[in-house]
Image (cartoon, rainbow, N blue to C red; front, side, top):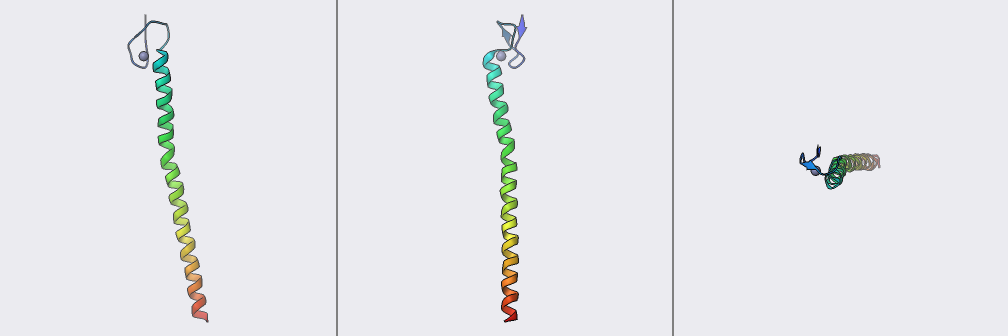
Length: 69
Ligand SMILES: [Zn+2]
């Protein structure tokens, strides 16, 4: 008699239920995907902040250029 490690119900075979193993691997992939989204958001947020910084520098440069003239 063997208990499935995933659903903890009796398994007919000596292994975890195939369905449970597949379901768990899909959930693990979904979890990985979910965890990767904040990283992507942070990356795009960083690049946006970079863009803002570049714009600020460009504006500063064009303003100081205006002052020179
Ligand atoms: Zn199971």
